[in-house]
Image 1 (spheres, helix red, strand yellow):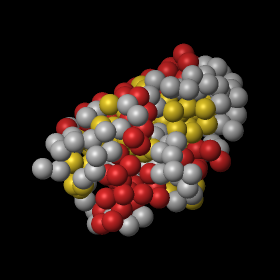
Image 2 (tube, chains in turn red, brown; image 1 turned 30 degrees about the horizontal axis):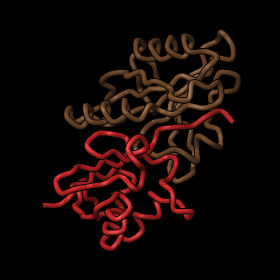
Image 3 (tube, chains in turn cyan, orange; image 1 turned 120 degrees about the horizontal axis):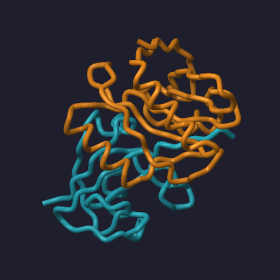
Length: 93
Length: 131
């Protein structure tokens, strides 16, 4: 078993067009490292140079926003489902 | 060109007026390039100068669109003191290259509705045809 990761349209250039990919890792940070090994460049779109989750990317583990779970340190186990969605945001300034 | 039924445009304008002076935001789901339904989203920022979809609501809505084979056809938001044109922030944060970005302004009682494509930082205005 592995962790299923749903990739949004805008990031599918990193996954050869795949909507769903699989990975492994005991935390979200480790999962993203694992994915980046096969889908080079994906990590840079999710994590800032300072090592934090990008402010305008939403990541959900089993439908919970990881900002309320432990961010990149959120623990994962086989069978978990991870969803990535770009935040929809903007403003007049 | 973006074609929308009058009722959808009216719903978006009413939403924007109701939330004024904060920015209002939402989407129109679509299927095969045709608008199917307006979904008003909560602006998690509740701000007159910024909007961000509530993340839990966004997940629910995106999943319901997936289930219905819909896509985010239009992403709309209001500007409450400036023109209905994408700001630098709007351009930097645009994350749905396939969507029409609809902007309305509530700065005056006049109807101000404009639509844009925003792809890799390039903004192209397109006509809005209200049916």
